[in-house]
Image 1: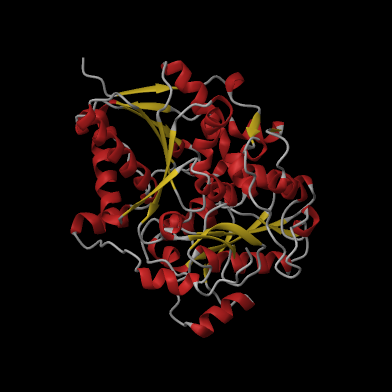
Image 2: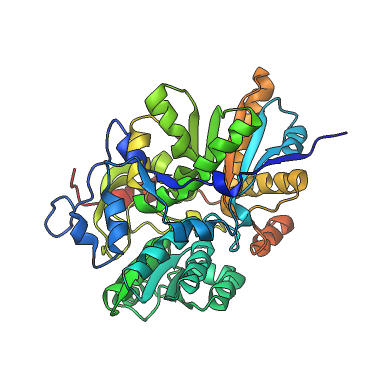
Length: 455
């Protein structure tokens, strides 16, 4: 009988009890975030007005490799974890490749993406501190949906600033957030000083994750008993996402294989780091030679065409200065449908790892990503989110190389979410109205030249 899929799960007892903090094992630690006012390295207490205190400690922790998952969070994980590791026989056959392709299917969570892994943790820590309100940003809406659900689960009120282009492109994600009880505002808006300033300069501004972060932080700082929560980029977010790779590591053992290549799509770094870092520790500590590939959009290529430089994580300059690969915090990405990848910078851990040659990056054009998503849908029966299509495209590139060489390489990628609420994007692709956006060298240099030189 012809093979299609084979899935591997873990028992409840096998679900990891700790997250993995790769900072503790890195040979070259990430440079410290800098207080923009004093130009001094950030202290933990500097972050207390913005984040829950335990999250601040996790953010700057470069000592402890393993951090316990609170039992209340792990109990919530059990609603949908372990997520399946799938051998993609259908995709292998469609490509005619000798490669063995596996994907970690994070689309099976209640909100349809990996984002819930950190949302539950962040909401829990806020609740434990007695915080009553949380704010956040969201691009395509996966993180906003996850935070809205997690906030309701822990009895918190949530306010979400959704990037305006995605607010209009993806109305059903907005509806999901509102169904869970969140207040949703299109960003940039007139409800914050940051939003007003942006709209004053550019009344037709369609927003970016950088604009939405500015508004969410401002609201958190000006609202009693409120904290900001973040869906990617920062180190504590990636820490929580390592549940993905830690599960995949055990599941690959059950499959009797170990990945030669690990791939994740890339916006700020949380889902790429989540699938990669647990495997990368074996490269660091044991000398394994697994390759790690971050797949970013060609319209927002901070890893492949940005510079390593201290920069703000948001447009208004409310965040600390972060040592990262960046296109400049004023960079306005094109209106691609992979809204979760439309971010100007990369997390500090990934930036240091890329700088040290521990990982690679590729940029994927929008049409290639949807072509890959269509092939995957027809081969495996799952319609992927536009963000995940970038990881699939990179996996297909690597699998095709194996056709030429005849190598049976083991490829693992993270299917970070489903695309069932993104069918308008697929409709545009099928009708031929979707187009590629490739940022020009002039745009990159113009934004980078405006950065303050801290290094």
